[in-house]
Length: 157
Picture 1 (tube, one colour):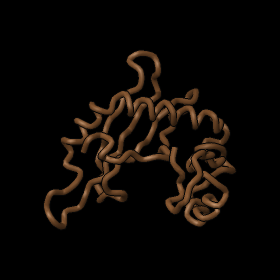
Picture 2: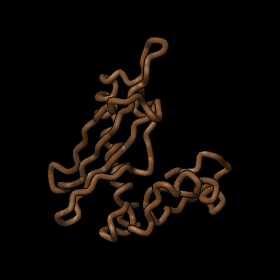
Picture 3: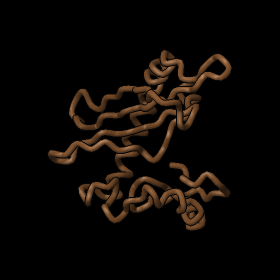
């Protein structure tokens, strides 16, 4: 994972915020990013705003599974993304925002699945794929944004 704060310099190791939505490499990076993160930080409601249904360790493990899945299906995802024309080829065109949805609700074969959606609005972060995960917690199905994005060049685009 990378530090959520975009201003460096950065340490090598990162630690996760109690809300599960941000990673920081140092206390100074966390303090610099706090003015932005505090609007979305829901640490009082437990990781991922699920009122204690999961732990920080579960969030990290889920992130590892999603990262593994993306790495293992990199070529397939890249081929699907290439058909979407996310980056306009003409001047003034608006780039589209791709969202990779990884479904972990059924972990027995056929194992995780994914789908790629394109948001109707212009890309909030051009050149990257936003990543969200859907998981089952007992009777609850929860969909949450992952605290990382994947650059299009990772998929060869």
